[in-house]
Length: 215
Image (tube, rainbow, N blue to C red):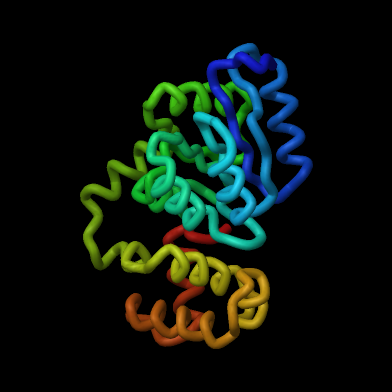
């Protein structure tokens, strides 16, 4: 790593081990340098306003804010910054939503080191980075009937709530995880069921599994 590296990177992930691993990978390059790191969405927004950087590597599952919400905030304040989403979630779950919200690319955390570096360099040059799997998903999405993709009518927060309910979490657990009230999560649940024409959690879970929205 060199302080004169062309690509300055801001890492946002709430797992210290992940951040250390990325810093170790970047340290072996000559063209990428870590400008800063953050463990939360709010701190990432604060740092983004203070630091000079070109690419943000942003996790979706942060402890205080959904990564897509952070993405939208960052892009509204710094439209020229390239945000690469980095997540444990399958591409089918959040990749298209991320790209529509302004992300330059989406990577699963199981990707190879070489792919991570390639993606950082590619988005730093102003290009999008998508995997072959995501390219296929985008192609399928073009011809998919609205009735077959009811979950795509949900807001980002509603979609997140859907996946958490389908994963077996209770309304109170979700409220605690997202730092929201039980009443708010209950309202999200009601809107989800209404929009998707479902009757209860069992049907919601069945839909999520059928559409590969949860593991």
